[in-house]
Length: 395
Image (cartoon, rainbow, N blue to C red; front, top):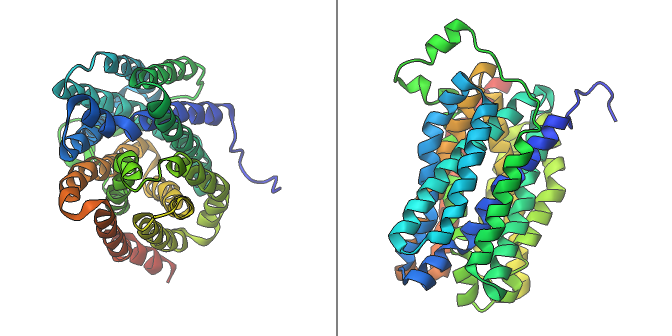
């Protein structure tokens, strides 16, 4: 092991990774079943159920619009505490969801709490990870989401088959409560901005809400997350339609296992070889995974798709955020984080609604073929917005 490498696994890094895990666990537990919940409990159409899934992301987007700016003024720790309290309160509201309209309101409020909390956590980790180990550090941090992406959907589908929706809401409430408790053990210091830097962030102009330097890579990831949302939002319903519910229970276990074991390798490659090698390959791998997913007629095919999708999406997820972190100045890290997540949120939010409207005309398999075509276009999109710039800097 290279002793000259700056330390990565500090106490604060480990704590914020656990916080991120419980944020994501809450999200995935609900996201995997919310469309089914809306359709079975309130008789919602696929389009309306997609809105119930997607409006959460629009709530997160609304919060992130201001969260990056607020972090610069009040600090990321206070933002994290505030978001954790709101996340707990919003999660408890699901027990009182008595109508489709009320569910939409709760989902939006919960999304706002999620947006504040995850932006604060992402900003904290971006500031404590050494720049020389950026890809590796963000990759390890992202494993907290990976583990949650395995446990959450698995528990969500298992409980929905053998328990009740109230049990799922209880599990989410416990996760939110535990997240609030461990947040107070963080000892990371807020970055103190100069008077000039604070003055720059006053007023209502573009640069006070967005970090322009990360917009190109954020647009690419927005489209990719748009494609990925088709899988997570309608996975439970799709699995029942193709009669692979039993195999589907293990989909996210395989998905997360592949990310878990590939993430450290991907992070080191990112730091040593550069982002282009990772991103081009990952986009193509994700496209192949979605095609395989669309043509799953047997359990082993579905699980093979899980492995391919996990490899591609996992690499994109960590590398996209690492590119954003590398592209900005230290004192604008909060804005960079919120900008990146905002555009990713737009993709995740629009996806369920649009795909819910397409499904009646194409069916689930046809819809996923359309998604794979969009993924193919993302190769060109990445080259135009970011990849060619990297090549120009090297030459």
